[in-house]
Structures are given as C-alpha cells and as structure tokens.
Length: 309
Image 1 (tube, rainbow, N blue to C red):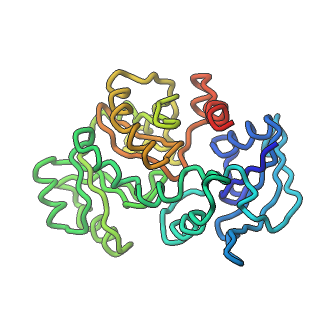
Image 2 (cartoon, rainbow, N blue to C red):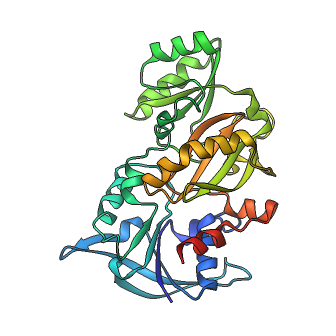
Image 3 (cartoon, one colour):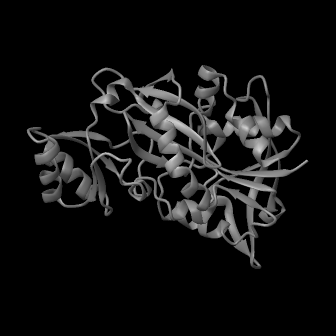
C-alpha cells in the first residue's frame, strides 16, 4: 500500500464526468493505495520540511461523485510515494510558488508528477518553439505592430493568452475585422504578459487532436471538434469528443518531442495537433483520459499506474 497525494482543485467544483484526476484516483484506489488530496493553498514549509493540510479521499467506484473525505490532518509530504500536480492553470505566481515548494522534496523518496522544475521551465505555449519545424507560424508579442505585420502575411490568426487554459480568451483575428483593435486593446490592458498569435489553420473545423504521451510515448488520442461557427474545440466550451487514431504524422511529432519530454521529467503530457502541426504541449494538468477511455477503450490511468508501480 502506497501513500499518494493529489494537489488539485476543490472536489466540490470538479466535473466528475470529465475530470482526469478522478480517473487517476479511482485506479489508485483499486490498487489499494491511500489517496490524500490537498489544495495548493494548503501547502507550506515548516522546520525545513514540506507539509500540506490533507484529507484522505475515498471514492464510490460505481459513482465517484459520492466521495468521502476523512482523516483531516497535517501531512509531511516526504511520506508520500507519489504526488500528482493536478490543479488547473492559470500558470501564475501562485502556481509557480507551489512548484518551488515541491522542489524541496527528495525525489529519491517522493516522486512528483510532473516534475516541478520540468513544469516550471516548460511554459506550454513557449515550449513548442523548441520544435520550430513542427509548429505553424506563431509569434509571442505585446506589439500591435507585430500583430498587424503577421496578419498582412497570413490574413487570419488565432490570439490566445500565454498562460490561459480551457479555450478561455481565444479569438479569431482577421485584417479587416471591425473588432481587431478592441481585441488587441483588451489583451494589452487585461494582463502584463505577452500573448500568442498563431496562423489560423482551417483544419480546425475537423477538430484538434489531443494525444496523451506517457513517459515520452503516445498512448491514446481523441479529436475535439468545435461547434459550428466556433474556432475553440475545448470540451470546456462545448467542443465534442470524437474517436480518432494516431496517424503516421502524429507519431513523427511524438517521436520528435518524446526524448525532450523525458529529459525534462514530464511523465504525463497532452499535446494538441491541428492538421499536421503541433500547436501546444500541455504539461500542467493534461485532460481527456475519460473521453479516450469511453471512445477508444484505452485506459490511460491504468497505463500510468502500471508504469509507476
């Protein structure tokens, strides 16, 4: 029996029908482990040790939404065999601080998934630039001039916050759009960070493909298809999941990025592919395990625990 901790969002705010962390806890519980959960805010350092206010979580395996939280206590996290970092972004200073704290743990005793330094040094929208031959034309900027120059060349583009998630704040830009200046103004006034502008890929109408890689190897995929008249395919914003296989060009992308993911100790990763282009590498809290299991009968939670056990 192992002690496992999950740094995650409040269970009362989770969508049990789609949340991948629940899959991981269910599989861990089936294997007889003790599973503890805590919120990132409950993490602290005292006497040079890392602690968290934890609850022991027990799920009803037939209906995980029926869960019990017991044994509230202060846990020394060095007593955990594995800790999963599973809170949703935004990837902000609060997120980064929790990574710095978890980095203090002795990795020989407690393995953190994904590795805190690996996450911290791999911002999801910037990591793709390590693979320039795989990505569509993309800029990271706060310059209106640069965006206008980009639109002169590519006519249509997608603008995204650099640390956003779940399709929030994603807009289609085109040179002749009446709202172009307002969109750019809202990005410039809404945050201090630069933003991402990526060439619009018409293949998005067929969906973007989410591929899960475990320890650098692809293990399962789904396509997320946007609603009509929508460019965002995220399940959060009404995209629908569709069964899909991993193609030859998908495998070539996975082969190219897999060794770098392993080097950074990024064990559990979700990548997004539109057409033949890599558009994002998700290392914070990859999702879609439940949808992949439902559509393709591939149980990625089981694969994860088989590799960790």
